Length: 106
Image 1 (tube, one colour):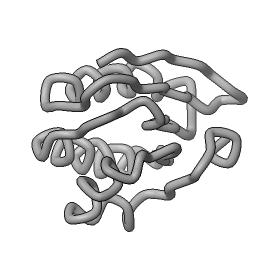
Image 2 (cartoon, rainbow, N blue to C red; image 1 turned 120 degrees about the vertical axis):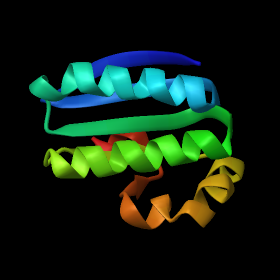
Image 3 (tube, rainbow, N blue to C red; image 1 turned 90 degrees about the vertical axis):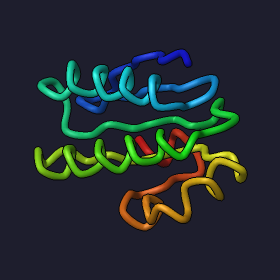
Image 4 (cartoon, one colour; image 1 turned 180 degrees about the vertical axis):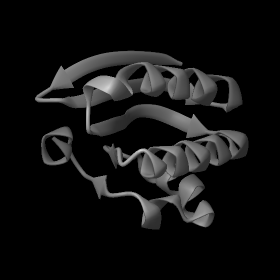
């Protein structure tokens, strides 16, 4: 997986591409941890994520909990329908704001 970082008005935008698995979600969590001192909102752009593993879903749930405990808003955008279906059983889509476009998320 590849992560492109951008900062927009104290919002950290992470543009993800590839497959999200247990190893890459750990990498994503590290990038979020490195950026949280400079932001109040993290936007995960899933537009180029083709697949997500069940273990990655668990990692995203943990990241969501950690962000909530730190008063950091975590949002998702540009979810492919297949990825949204993989995330739905976890309840993650009801825990986090989900936007259709990057512009709406910003």
